[in-house]
Amino acid sequence: MRLNTLRRKAKELEFPVDEKTIFGVLSSHQNFLDSVCSHEDPIDSKYKRFCTIYGIVMDLTARRLWITDGRPCEGKISTYAL
Image (cartoon, rainbow, N blue to C red; front, side):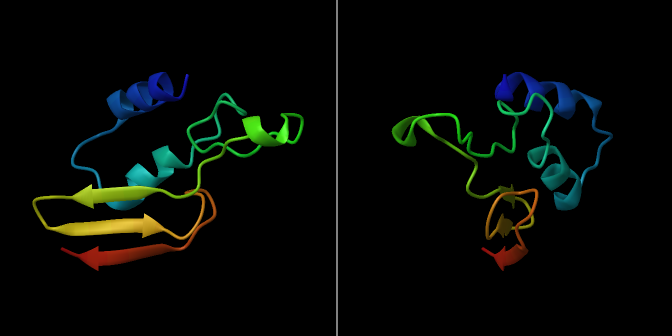
């Protein structure tokens, strides 16, 4: 589900894109609880829970990396030069 959502959203993008646009895709809650930005389901048993813990975007040409300090939908984005 998550991969299909990413593929569909990537096809909808108008290029060129920037990191904020990609973080918008990574923050998608479409098909929640199986969304790209996944949050724990409290109904699941403790050892079967999973969630998205951060988002990362890289521009290898510009040698830049952006990473969130939490889920892509709510985390602060930090920028790093590589």
